[in-house]
Image 1 (cartoon, one colour):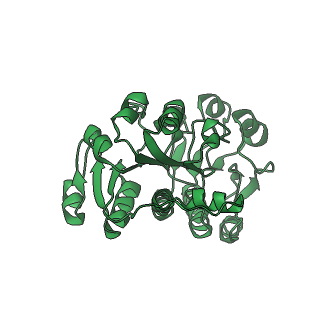
Image 2 (cartoon, rainbow, N blue to C red):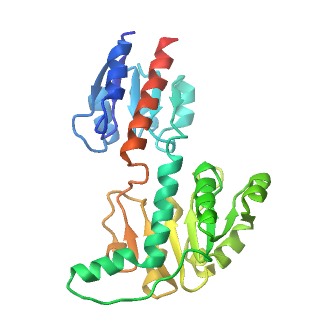
Image 3 (spheres, rainbow, N blue to C red):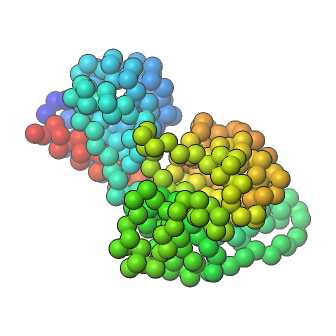
Length: 308
């Protein structure tokens, strides 16, 4: 094999050299994004226009980029979401697309549950006060007994629901097509989306992006949530109207929110001003273990493709 592989994602092999060893042993030639940050479409073309394969993160492999990569035969996505790749254009041009969906389940679910604890225990807020020299205390809540709403019951949503249920929370879920058998086995109650908004003490978003069924929590939907509820998003930034969320938090309708994803990243918006918001820089899958496994599987996918 002598196919040229462009590793375009911003971080690679930082937590172990197994992915690079596999590439070297395969005989595939490769080169790594030298800028060590998320590339623009023009930068992808400037660095890898002639590559035959790409190991990608969240860089934009849109129509324009794919039209200008004449040799590209395969994109192996290091992660699960594919909305940064023009799937229709890839199909038209015969470009194979792979991802690593199973690896992300546990780290994303763990972050969602960690955010639940942070919000109900007010950990970030209490820590910030103490570091500023203020020894003040404000009572939090138990997670046990809270009504946890899971919006989106794919693999990550299901795992998050299962963990929350084992922590003695009341867990509810909503999805376009819900898995009733799973719900019965795990004691998760399936309800409509509107009912989920109304009853949840903590709402955690785990939706998958669908062009045929776009969804966003806007001012109307946030107003449906009970006063004092909390919101978590570790899915996609586009699922929340950030201005409407800011207003709901600012006026006290929502008690708190925790976000790992934003409409525009890096995020520097108004939510940074609020004390009742926990913000993380899109790190849900960024654990040493999961990142190494994800990169290893992405490399195996591209090796297997070019081995055929």
